[in-house]
Length: 171
Image 1: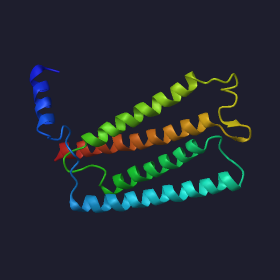
Image 2: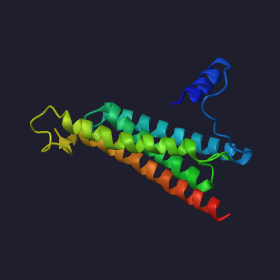
Image 3: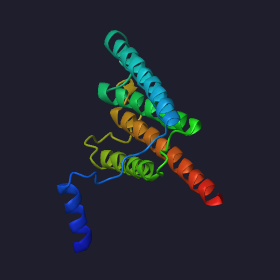
C-alpha cells in the first residue's frame, strides 16, 4: 500500500466515510430479494425445527446437532443464491464485486475446512468411518457436505458473475 493510498484510507476513516461501497439495489431488486430471503429463512426454520424434533424424539440421524443444522443452513443459502440469480436480484446495479468477494470466500472455506478436518482427524478409524459411525452420519461427512453445498452456491455465483460481465461487455 502506497503512502498516498494509506492517507486516503485514514482520511476516509476519520471523516466516517464508508471504506467499502455498499451494494445498491433498485426497488424491484429490493422487493424480490427480501421475499426470497423471507422464504429461505422460513425454510431454514422449518427444517431446523423438524430436525430438532427428529433428533430429540426419534432416532438421531447425525452425530452432531450443530452440523446437521449447518447442512440445512447451507441448503437454505443455496436456495437463496439460486432464486436470486434466477430473478435477477443477485447483483446490485453498482456491479458484482460484493458477490465476487462472497464467492471467493465460500470457495476458500469449502476447500480449507474439509482439509483441516482431514488433517486433524484424531481417530485411527477416521477414513473407515468417514460416512457412517455408530449408525449415524458422521460429523466429518456432515461438515464436508455442508461445505460442498456452500461451494456449489459459490459456483452459481461465479457463473452468474461471468454471465453478467459477458452481457455488459456485449452492450
